[in-house]
Amino acid sequence: MKDLFEVFFEPGKVFTGLTGRRGAWVVPMLANTILLIASTVVTMHVMGMDLIMRQRFASSNMSPEQMQAAMERAASPVMSWIIYGSVAIFTPIGMVIVAGLLMVFGMMSSKPPKFGAMLAMVNLAFFPYFLVTVVMTALVTIAAPDKTALNIDNLLATNVGAFVNKSETSKGLYALFTSIDVLSIIEIGLLSFGFSKVTKTGFGAGLGAVTAIWILYVASKMAASLFQ
Image (cartoon, rainbow, N blue to C red; front, side, top):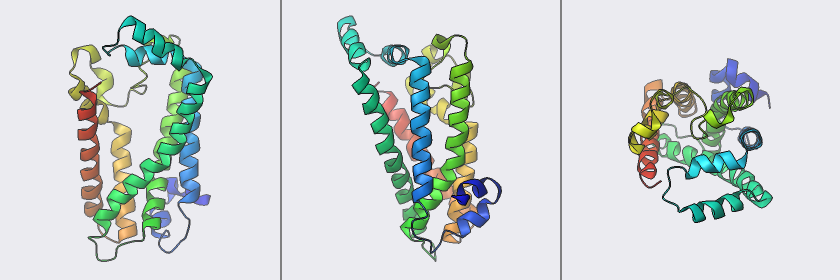
C-alpha cells in the first residue's frame, strides 16, 4: 500500500524495489480499477446518461428511430451496471496489455525482469495519472454550470484537441490532437523511468519503448475514429 504514496515522491526507490517481489501488482491494479469505476460513476451521475449518449450519437448516421431506441436502452439501469462492469474488466486487461508490450522490449535487455515486476511497475506508474485525471474530471463535471457544454470525449483541457473546433477538424486529426496531452507526456516519462529501473537500462531505452507503444496506441485511436 505504501508504494501508492511513495511513487509520488520516491518513484526510483519504488520501481527498483519491485524486482523479486511477488504480488506487488495486486494493490495498485485494484486501486486503478476502483479509481476508474468511481470516475465513471461520478461522470454518469452528474452529466446523466441522456446527455452522454446524445453526444456519442451526434456524429453517427443513425436514424431518429434508431437513436431513440438506443437512448431507451442506455437509460436502463442494467446498462449502467454493464458499463461499470466493463470498466472493472477492461482496466486490468489494459494494464496487462501495456505490461506485455513493455515486456517484449524488456526481453531485449541484459537482465529481463519477471512479468509480475513489469505489471507492478505499469500499475504504479499509472496510479498518479489516474488519480489526477479522476479528481480533475470530478471537479470539472461537478463545477460546470452548463453540463451540455462539456465534451464527454474530452472533458479536460490538457490537450491540443481542447483548443480546436471538433466539427471543423477531421476525425483522425482530432484523435491525434486529443492524444497530444500534457498529462500523457508526464505519464510517458514516468513509465519510461519505471521501465529503466525494472530492466536496469537507461532512461533512453525506456523512453524508446514507451514512445513506440504510445505511437501504436495513437495510430489505432486515429484509425478507429474514422469508423465512428
